Amino acid sequence: MTSRERVVAALRHEEPDRVPLDIGGTESSGLTGIACNSLRAHLGLPQGKTQIFDVYQQIAKLEPDLRDALGIDTVPLLLEPLAWKPFALPDGSPCEIPETWRPEPDEQGDLVVRNDAGTVVARLPQGGFYFEPVHAPLAAVEEPAELDEHAAAIESFDWPSFADESLDHVAARAERLFRDTDLAIVGNLQLHLLAAGQLLRGYEQFMIDLLVNQPLAHALLERLVDAYTRRADRYLDRVGHLIQVVLLNDDLGTQTGPMLSPTCYREMIFPHQKRLFAHIKAKRPELFLLFHSCGSVRRFIPSLIELGVDALNPVQVSAAEMHTAELKSEFGAQITFWGGGCDTQHVLNRGTPRDVANEVRRRIHDLAPGGGFVFTQVHNIQPDVPPANIVAMVEALRKHGASR
Image (spheres, helix red, strand yellow):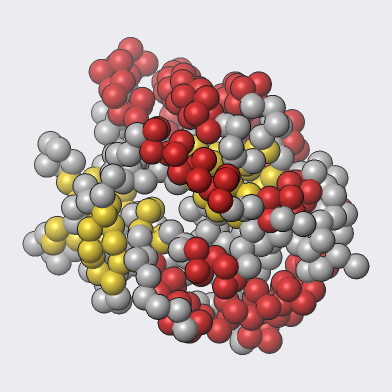
């Protein structure tokens, strides 16, 4: 099978020739810049550009030589900047960042990024590895009518300002990827809802809104979906015929359980997801809908299936209620598990290569039978992961992931 055929077969719940591998096909299944540089050195590959396309999580684009070396079956259709510039990662190793992302030191020694008004919108604490969003532009809003004053912030949410290329550039890259590779192309629309409210209003404030200011919460989510459907139409009109998977994001779970009660979710979040997901499905019914949500999300899976979600990522196996054998038994005929291949909280970063291989074998045993499994580690590979463990993970997949 080609990589594209392999991924599509898995999404159709057919057993491909081998379990497909995704590393770097999304901004939640890739490598941090430091991990990318370490892995390239370990494999004897020359220093690459290490372009950091997700500046908050510090996630790097994977260059073709690394993708080939690992045998990856996916490639993301990213939103990129028009220009890149040299920068140094927190460990001092080289990378490139978007030209319009302009970190500068503040008086505390942190790196901060300011918007055009001079407000600090992101901060990388001294000694840290990631930029944190620190500005909630809608924090002072009290009534739904006030949202009209913030239309620009709502309309532009989830399309990073530093990703300033045009849709013409995105479409041209999609055409090259479709023509020149046989990889499964993942179109990343992001399009958060719960997380969008938390970032626009402030995490604590939006969680309060969901309980005590529901008219405002619904009004914000309605405006977000209005903006997102317009954006999806423009995007899918240009590249929908070239991609196979479209990624949407949110975070509904925590380490120990759901982030919000299933009742609150069904009342406040589900109706807006339903309108958005149905719009995308109607626009391009042939596309597979991949939904990212970290944490303990088992209790939401029936709702996600009802929404038309085809695949779930990252399948956080270390979170409560996320037991792979049980998930496969209960939901495996209805949804593909895109992840869960190796625990990144305890095994990939702290285990030996043998521990990693045993973990991979267990997850393949649980999730692969009958198709419906795309292998990737649980979320992004962090700076503390030994590159030998990444190689052990991929080698174990090759050994145990072939169809019997």
